[in-house]
Length: 309
Image 1 (cartoon, rainbow, N blue to C red):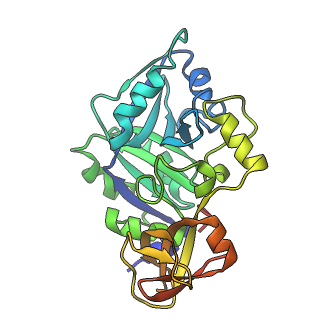
Image 2: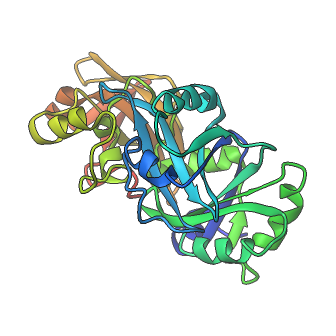
């Protein structure tokens, strides 16, 4: 059986993301308007391409993360279903004189996320399929990836045709993908970080923020944190001295017994070692690279950086 850990690095894995929905942005000013609202550089994105970015509050904290897909006559902002209404209201409030419109995409489509070096080829082939209504690829989450969308009642029938004929790609379940994320290094919105976080706490400044573009909402705080401050909290990856995965939500403690954070997700490495994401106080883990989770010692993966596997 193909190994999804290997395929994500050398082929592609595909996961149906039925937790995502899309907002549609149209009009001749759509790119210039979004450029002032998203952290990523929107202007270079061409039809069939995608980019990953954030929408921030003015205080610099995260409102939502988004995948932007450029199409012929509009742009899709793909985000978590839980955030679609709030994101629509937030962005619409900034629509004043611009010749652009934003609305919930109707009819809705179901998205498939492909990750790995074969993802662009999958997206290219999918773009010619009549059942695929959105297709964008790019360096998403710091790796080659693609996001495809089709009618909910059709996407399951289309999926087999998206897989590469040489067994270099495979479909994984949402649960399997969630566990794979820890090994691949992909934190997830609403799981590993939320609206209480600044981008730097999660490493999102490396993959979702352009420091070469013009102003956007929340930029002033982001720049100050980058140049003068250190985040109070950090997302880290732990390698446990056990083959048993800890429970999500378990407290993380220092060797002295002081609670310093929480486990946000767990999974196995390709070598079957138990791994976990944890959101912890930065000062505590800088003092010691070893922590305790459910009575088991765990060691901070000092070489790991978010979104870099």
